[in-house]
Length: 526
Image (cartoon, one colour):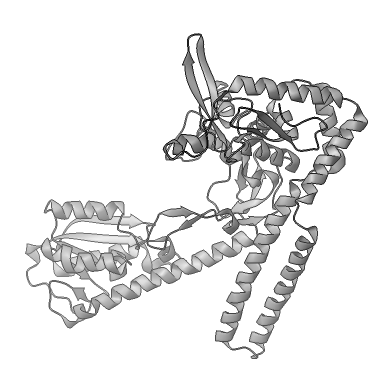
């Protein structure tokens, strides 16, 4: 053991610290818990040292010191139960050179604790020259941890780009199969819950209303469902949350697309994750069976988007998300006011509310029920005037034409796919050139990394274009659905508003303007 000598063994109360990470476990028995324990105990027996306790952290990375047994070890040092710590090698103590250096050069000496690393010959109770290279060993251990982290990250990214599921737990509504761990399968038991959420969203219900209904009906939350099906959860929620509903409604996994890479660890030493912008997500289309039809999904998203950035969260109302200020073009907030006969709600300009002292815009204060009456009356008039099928078809076609005028050019999608195919061929040729000795290793890596980034950018562009174009439902299907909806129901609800109205504006004189998604034969103001 590198000639480590202990002249006064009876002075020491020994702690054996043993650690094994998942990466170390792959090396086999040489790094196993039993191997470390055997080596440490044999050393203590030869040196006639008294072992007070063993501290074992199994399956925990050395890049963190937030380990249960290590924390217990530190607590026993504080309580003066032990004054010697022995590990198999320095990497067992830790792979973070900053943290390792802190314990070796400051904490252990200040607490009069002697630390010994058997294979490295490190003994901070001895002035051996081997101790001088300890900082370098710590740096090498840290570099090893970083290298392993980068390799694991690379493998995960490649799997994500192939559309393989790499999460530990399937999204709610899906399940994993041991035979196919990287593929999602529909969970038939949870499927009706997902279908109900999208159905209610398309009917105009808010996320809060959907969540409340699920809770009242005792529908298990995702965490409750996981627990009852053998899963493990740190926190179990008994009530559905509107944010959870929103996450489900915006998740393309339910239309068969694999959506991964939404979070990213800061670095290999930190467990903290940061949320990435959507353009950096890894989205691969048609990787598994969908639960929700694409037309239903995008309709639910459209209904959801009309409710964004409104001031009143607890009160739901018909025109939520549709009403804007005519002068500053900002959404009008909604506030309540107590009256003698109850409570009334008023639209107010958010610009005025925020900057009233600066004189920006005006209050635009107008009762919500008054605006609703105007909008409902206008829509009923239009629907009655256009109850004939041929005229209804004309309205639908006008809306579709307007949508398609703003569509991204379909040719751009085809061009991007051709670029992707060309890049893939170029990367294949790079491999052949490297094998044939035409390209050096350094040139290969440099060119490959550049083309790989280009490929990722093009794939993200294709995904965005396809998602955008998917929002436009087939003309005939859209027209038939529109006719069926309006001919069967004259009640004005949010679903009809989303179909027909682009936005509603109110000017400083409290005049209401309605802007439709089609050319309105009548005046657009009241």
